[in-house]
Image (cartoon, rainbow, N blue to C red):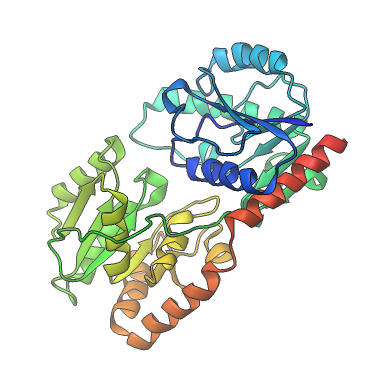
Length: 364
């Protein structure tokens, strides 16, 4: 049997849904190979395999650290796997075994988050740029979630076209069973779910919302997500402007988040840059009409099932959202198109395509 290791150190992070779904479906479709799933000790019970060929192993090597470059390298060499799938680019650059690397996006190289220490963040960018180049060169196969990221990565590091493939991610209804109403202060509201880093463009979403209050005076804006430093900075910005009808939920349970998806007037995704952009596709699972930025990969992923706007243009955002709020036929059309669009993506298909890349890498 072939031994495949999956570097799943990010399984309990914002990108971890990809890793968790990959392992979940690999368990179902691959009963031949053996797998070592490498996770931090704190996450050893986060995912419990049911396939006896899958084993959880704990490792303690922080991303972009000396321990990752030295200790993790030694660990992998001793593990002796026939193939390692690194689910993020951060990895020991001197590892020379067969490997598959997933590049989700290039946001680390192209953005600055003001909630971070300026010097530390830019130092990390310099390290990341070097790591990305070396990893792209040494990986046996490379996976990206969209053609947009594939083109960006190939422009960043040439001569990798023949080993870089696209495996689309997917979305599904995350909560099995009934939903629980969230005690929202608004009868009608726009919804955003996710992080609030600068490139997510939430401040401009707040600016647009305030303009919409001129014609929709009771319209709310609900922002779902933990109140970390970036969310707190956004909240302070809105308060300094005297903005009203904006509600930060903090952490909410899945059943309440799903209720918000099901009851929002529109799901708005204003991001400036994405690798796949999972939240609006998740919103379509709950029949929410989607209004989205036209930047990056969003038109590729959402197709004609979203009403688009230019994310740096407040008036463009206001106009697009207003159309969805006031044009009932447009709303219904977006909902129906969303039902079709969401069916184009499958986590199981993604896992099968990833397994195919494992087999190709093992033949090299």
